[in-house]
Image (tube, rainbow, N blue to C red):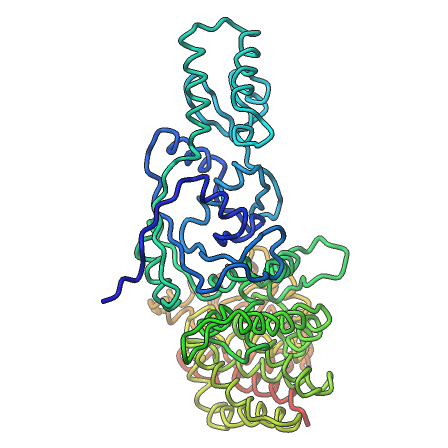
Length: 584
């Protein structure tokens, strides 16, 4: 069996120099940095003491040197090696020794400043006290600065310390020795494993998992984002900026922020890959972006540049704010107005891909497209189309689109797919059976909530619409809207219903204002229903009973019979809402 890797030894200064000129493809220093300053301090302390700090894992890139890069700033060459494991260590060393800023999780840029006490060889995270103290070299970055002479630095440090207190000859020698020892970390040895360029991405991920002591995993999106850092850093920065702004509700300018989805960079990357390459499986895309011919296994710089250009064009449309917010209107039309009632993020991402294909590839009228995508989104959310094996299901849908020639065929494909799945049997048998669950994140339950939004339903025993109430969310103990047990749990226990799963069936839940929920407490439904209905007309009661799928006289029914009948009525409400999304 051929060896999958070779072992290569480096010293620290060679690693830093190779990163600096781009031979080693360390993702840009502005990537999100997860290590604490204390952990960086410990890394320098271990190296200073001569302890081993672990292997580095590189992957040979399979490209020739001196190829023009996309968005790589001052890098002088195309990277021969991509970092698979050791990124945080190398980022720490590079940032400190070069005095570069890193980006924290909150997207704040700052430098890592480590202070060093030459008299006893200790490292501490810099603060105001080390900055004032003559006992410390405030920032060890100065040790490796090309503008500072190490002997002058040592002499000046000793002179300043002497101003505060006397030094023995032994202390002076210790200070000099420790400063020189720190400087000489440039020669610290690192052992690296360099994986062959023709190894598959899956094999690299498997190797990473097996040798990574922290038990982390890699996915194909991680590989692609790293590759973007090397060859098209602006593209990755665009994804990260979009993601950051989508989570920030404080801005006053137009932004991607919304209440339905706060995507991560790899989520938007999935959209760009889906739209640009008509692929849902990310492993193919990584190989393609490396310039690899999937049939011959050979690499080509021209092929790589062409594929990155395709990704660039697709990503521009994906991150376009007009596209993004017009698409989100489709979700609102379908009643999905908050992330609380989303069962799967993939539903949003894949629906956005289809929206872009419809808009740009087939030039479908925007109003028609939004209604079509609204219907499609409700369908995939209700049926869980992209759960279980989402990439496989989306690959099949994208494959069908390759045969489409015109806008009418696009509309018909989506419509026919829906109609072939949503039959009379679905409404009468499949959906009621699917509602027989206690899962609080049931796709069918969330589709029911979306239906209430679409139908303009009011909360149970409320004069306020669910759409308005749901804006407060379904999470906190004092949300505007809460899920209430129609047959309270304590009441059911008194009736001998001991199974928690049975008590928590979603057919036993209704959406009420939290104040009403508190008032209902654990009362017998025959008791609280009389009081609650006093405030409503017969018409209001009829509407309320339809929206909330309540059989007439439900409060007197046997609990098991109530669940069966209510499931049927919930299915009917969902059907009525779904028919509102018809394109006719």
